Length: 363
Ligand SMILES: NC(=O)c1ccc[n+]([C@@H]2O[C@H](COP(=O)([O-])OP(=O)(O)OC[C@H]3O[C@@H](n4cnc5c(N)ncnc54)[C@H](O)[C@@H]3O)[C@@H](O)[C@H]2O)c1
Image (cartoon, rainbow, N blue to C red; front, side, top):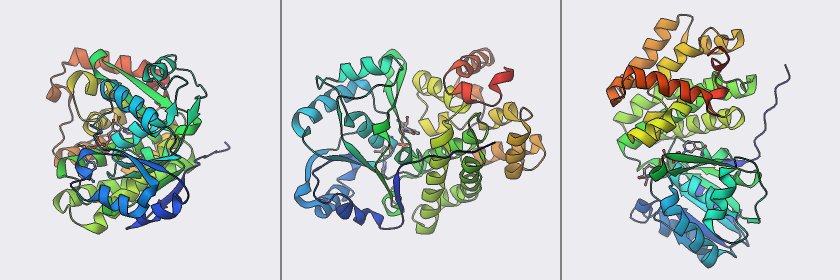
């Protein structure tokens, strides 16, 4: 087997690395996309100080899970009012980064519905215009800073769109763990579990290879050790740094494999039951581990390097880990009956991400 790993993002990691933004954006005009709390935390002023008059536009009302209902207006105003800027910098969690990914894909008409129509075809397209994206995550979770994907939600119609183009790979990712110090406990846990899910999903994945495994195994070990400690010590800079690096490694792993069954299930759980992304894509991990085990000797070896040789013990370890973080692991805990769960798993298995699952062939 010849392994191929490709990730074109210029990636900078380290405490205080946000200050590199000034050098990275030299001679460019920049629009900032960030989350509502950022100004109160002094982040908008800090970026203003770093960029001076290069900062020409600010969007700071990004809500969790970018939804077409809000994006339409934001998108059209952005292209009318800041259509000339060179680059967009997203400073925030996955919601800000994914919003920015949608904004940089310019349609001929400047209308958002033209973009939605292109996305609805599910086929790749070349946008009429685009902008460079710089991504600085403020949560340790999504890995969106090193992937080309953006999830666009349409909660009113119970739908989601996946945006993925050559131009939606960020040009630069700045992972500065200092930006994560203010993330509240609940979001720290749910985003950390999102990262764990990325790493595991890249392992039980038909696209896995020894390079993606290397990132995934290391990310999983770090998260299993660090996340419970960080939850009790949110101001600990060393733990914040280790989780930031773990989420980056998980992002690199799944940037080449995509996600699999747990994520496919999660979309329904978020759209129908309102579960936060990180919980929705992690509460099934013990179940999906059981479904992954025994289908492919190479995948089993990687899973066994992480969890040991006993599947029952491995599932229990994962279950107890999630319980220790206050996350319930059964569908019934979320009001889903056994019959509904079975249907949801079957449906998820048929989705694009579900088909990446190593156990899907046998399903
Ligand atoms: N593109 C990808 O590859 C990818 C992968 C996973 C998830 N996602 C998407 O990412 C989104 C979720 O992102 P997320 O989990 O990072 O959460 P988020 O961006 O929605 O942020 C969660 C909450 O934390 C707040 N917040 C963020 N950073 C903060 C900070 N430093 N201090 C204080 N508060 C802060 C936000 O305002 C928000 O209220 C979902 O829409 C999901 O679909 C994308």
